[in-house]
Image (cartoon, rainbow, N blue to C red):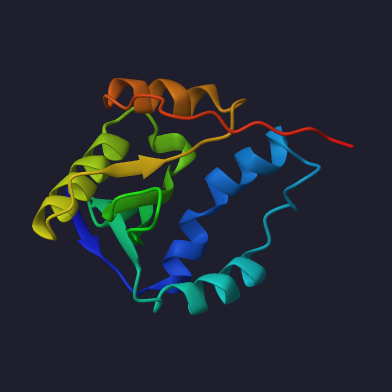
Length: 153
């Protein structure tokens, strides 16, 4: 198994399908159905954004999942101290490869990457109906620090 940084937006667009399908299933009012050409076009632009990093986990020569992270800089202001974080935008493994450790390996790579650039805070969010994500991040040791709420009008 190997994990590496990638600029292959086509591969990322393909690997995005499982997480996008889950989001569109759980929240059809917000998410469109997965469309590879649209995903490819989006990732074609995102892959070269300086603050974004993409990792692929590969096993036996096949991509099994990916992570999309963002390096965030929070400047000091009247209320907050300056700090940085690595924000996990998305992490996904192919459907038939779940619960095989690929997600944990990707998270390990994210932790190592953050340490290598002197960042000690990993942030992320997930949709409340995504119970698999909730359990996965709980096992990874994540703790809730804020709640995001909404009111539909």
